[in-house]
Length: 63
Image (cartoon, rainbow, N blue to C red; front, top):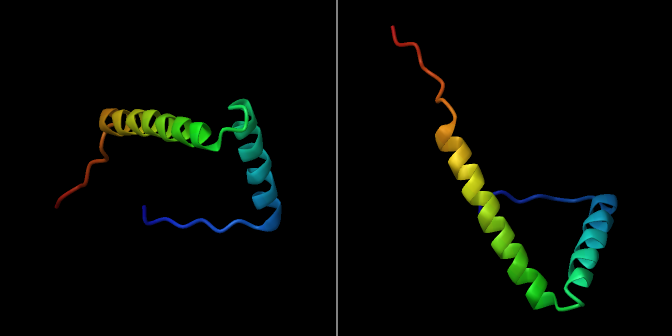
């Protein structure tokens, strides 16, 4: 992954709250939450890959 995102303090706080809630849904088991996040990200990446293959490619005019 070559894209690094910088967050300001408000964004960091919002992300922390979401992460805390996600871990709480897994009864505080951080590893279980992390494993589920990896699986969810894999499913989303597959959908993105499928959508990008299905999208028509822009044509270049040669001339």
